[in-house]
Length: 296
Image 1 (cartoon, one colour):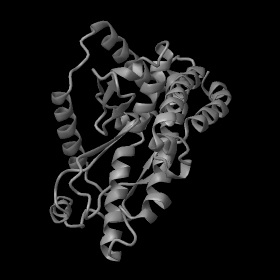
Image 2 (cartoon, rainbow, N blue to C red):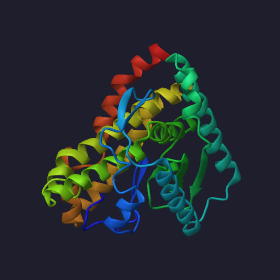
Image 3 (cartoon, rainbow, N blue to C red):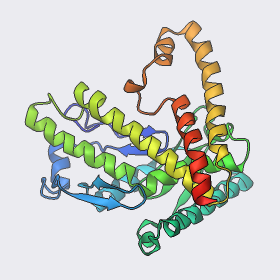
Image 4 (cartoon, rainbow, N blue to C red):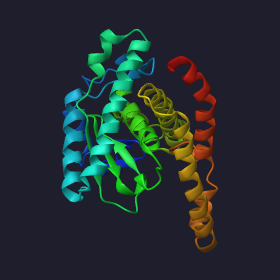
């Protein structure tokens, strides 16, 4: 998060999205954004994808510059998977999800707005057999860590991940998160840090619940996109079950040898950035019948 003690952090990578924070001082950061003149707190935009207004006070050029700079640095520091067959398959799934997004606009009778949400997606897989993750840049550049694919049994489950990532992109989640961080930084400056980004009050009372909200929103959008793309919506549940089963085995082993792991295992949802996997599964199971009626 952006705060006076924390502006030297580069990035936070979370499952499904990336939050970017450059190594710059607060004064320089404010100057880049236009000394506050470009940051009217009433600056909101309506997004037909998630059907809600979103705070949008970080200029598009700043979002693009910071996103692309980090993305290309990340690729330069990591090895790409060279298995052409695998890479081709994952990218083809991405193209199908794009078609699903277009169909979503058709179903919502908003096809005239589709062009605004049509991105030039770039999808890569990096070699990493330890990190179970994937993330999407706000500029539609998506990265899969190779380890996460070990938990997919078929293309439908890969489509679950892809739909989730593209859900973050078209829902403007990273830009929205950056805008909220900047807004809270202004509040922090005005209150001497008592309220604002970085304070325990803002983390527990605002940022963590908002983070979980965005993750749930990406799950739900991804479910719709993959269904419209012709994938089985039930595979979204089976994918998360794969992760849940592995996580339970790993946590059980670690909790016997690591007090910290035991604490994290029992961490309540209110202190987590992401919904508890079991809750994600319940939510998807609740939505699947509705999605099948609406889109199949």
